[in-house]
Length: 423
Image 1 (cartoon, one colour):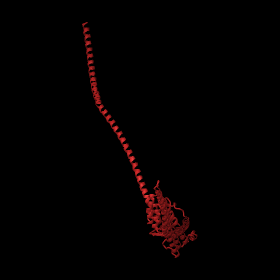
Image 2: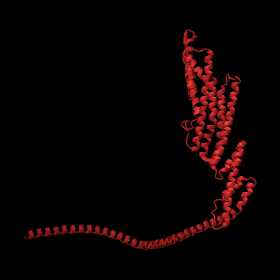
Image 3: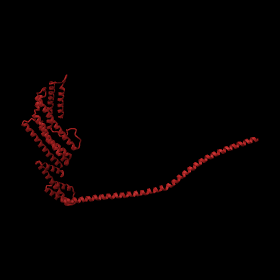
Image 4: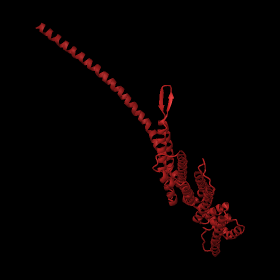
């Protein structure tokens, strides 16, 4: 029994010791957890304290923001008031300036009639036109004096228009170019723009017509004296002179149109110049066609396979001159077309067909082209057959090379170049 008791007692002690160790382990673990909680509690307490310190600052910032917002609202109100004050001042200033201009106009209107009369008496037409333009727009109110002054000014304008038109007509008849330019430019200031364009373009056109007819007369005189031109392309030279007269007039009138009359006047000027030069252009082409007996040559050499050497040379010279005349005419048409497009502000024209059609020129060009084609064919056929007949060889040691290909190529190149030049 004692042994059993002793054994039970030992068992209970071991169990109690195990429980004691377990309790110690749990106590150690609890201590670790407790220390962690204490540390977290310290951190939380620090954060809470920090937030307690920040809160007054946030409240202070909110207060300052509210104060700033109030100041901005007050400043915006002040700015709006300033803007409104400026607008009122601007309106008052505009009204003051308008009233001042009105006062100046009324005062000037009463003295303008006398100034215009004095200027016209001294033939200071530009000064008179400027004064009329300055005060003619003044609207009378209830003053009888203002109404009478405006009526008198209107009569002065009508008188000035009549005088300027008469002076321009006299200058045109006297061929005084400077005076014509002066009075036509003055017409734009007195409401006669279209009349000014018409008078100036007609004056320019008459100059072109006279200059072109002079060139044609000189050509006819040379032809009547038996001049053939020799190596000089007589008709092409005369045609070039006619075209230069017209081109020079266009270049001269271009500045005048740009300064006073604008694109519409520019187009009218180009068309008038071309129409005035057209009869002389047609005369040169017709004179060459008839004098050179182009029609007779067509009938005689159209189907000829062989030509005399002299005849071939004559045909070569004739074809060169026809080609040169058609080339010059085409270049002139491009020049005028470019001027028309430039006046409209367009790009470079793609063709020269924008010019007004002139039947006389078209007919004469068609006659020359219809004569050129068969004569060129006859010359080409004769030159090629001549090269074949007179075929010879270049002898270089034992090598024999025919030059007929080179000669034919030369003839084809010459005829092709000439045909292309005729456009």
